[in-house]
Image (cartoon, rainbow, N blue to C red):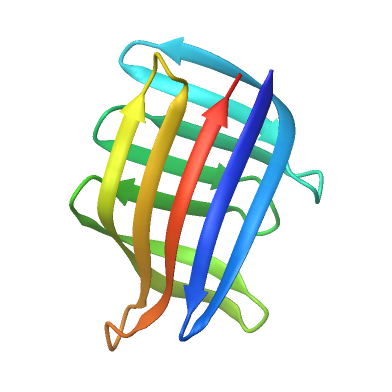
Length: 128
């Protein structure tokens, strides 16, 4: 199976388009769906989701965990060149279509202290 992640990232006035494809697998356990693949750095990535929430775990050193809640906010710890930093994900659009095999996610990554927007993302994850 192929996992495709298309992402439009906006930092200030700069916009970057990313299109990544990975070999992976899809499975369903109970009400959760899972996509598992290895990224370009050979780290295992697990996407666990249902119709209201997505958890993205990257098994790097240190492990990276991001959580996205439909219409909500979540505190996340992200490894950066200056160490672990806390951010807030604020999800404005979240839609899963299992028949079309696509998940759409629009969110802002905000600094935890000042709530300033670090970047805005429009992501589409598909699997075929």
